[in-house]
Image (cartoon, rainbow, N blue to C red; front, side, top):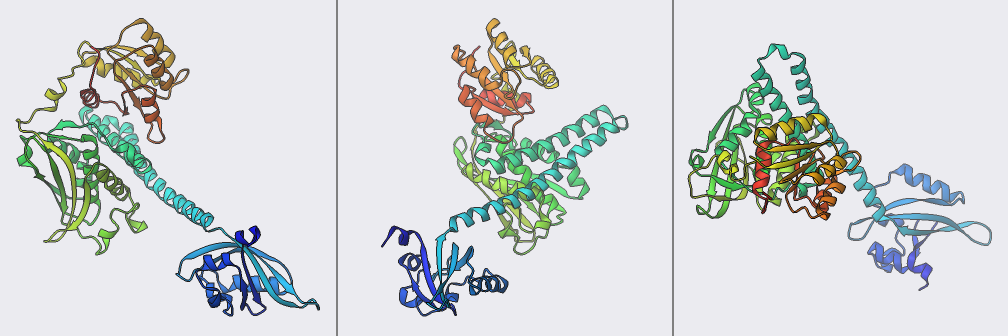
Length: 481
């Protein structure tokens, strides 16, 4: 066999399309034997992909003595699709009469697979961006409307409404980030929490949606009121929020129940199953589509569909699972099972837990290029008792670092002049051994990992809250005091 013969698929036919000869490469790819191919019409390989117009055009070209070039989708003997890039030339006898045709081909199946995947990815991406645009626009528009009519609300009501819709915006961003980089959303740091308080806090975010849909909700967690849990709080809250939103907006439910079951001993690792049940009606085959990337039918696509896909991924990454089932008495149930530790002692408030690592009298260097965020964050830290030094970029942060000793460094990543990567790397190079925590608004890309590689201990998503910071500090092994 020549090198030429081993690289190409070669097939010859008569003028009627009956195969008269094939090479070994063609036999191997098609899955037929030489005896099965020779004497058969070339239609034996047809996949049905190309219509009559395609074949009529091809035959019209070659029957007129011209060369035809193009891609053909064929099918193997086993029924598998493959693509070949083909050049077909007429064969002539001594009287210049066409006696048949020779097809020289190379397989390009991988190219078509990649093209198909790219097209599908683009379609899914467009669909996802449509969801995101809708879900971001709604709370953003409500915030703008609230600010325009601020004089119609009491200060307390206005603040509460702005907090609610701001949290909804952040929730959408978290969901999108999890779709793009699901492994980045597995929050490894555990926190001592009161499950009942966590659920009630999550439900409060959807109070308006519950009211507008006239849905009643019952939280049945009395047995966990005095039993604190050690869990991945941020992940659990994100998944619970998506479960709750789905129950509210799908199936026209009038009642939702939230309950939990513990499987394990107190004081030891076990599994907690969190149930979100409703009395709504969903299509019969809905369970097969519920965790797909866009929740099945396109007309039903919204953030609840995107959110459940994200939650399903996160639940499994956490060593648990998220399942759907129909309730015996009608309605639906989403069950989130995850690893947790049920403590023996009486419930501790989060304030008491966090007080183990107070900010009081800690010297903190805060580096942030957004002046409003710098001001607000500095006030929050100062109110908690910290002594705060502010810097507007990495260069000023390094200058402050040269002058004073700091117990904690909080820094943005993307800043002018010197960014967070260079600043953190320089501080570690100069021997700083205290905690460095990044604060970033980035949702996509590798910004978090890159800052940690530069020397940061961990990175938190904006907006930074006191609770989030204290929870993060409680998980660091050492704090320079």
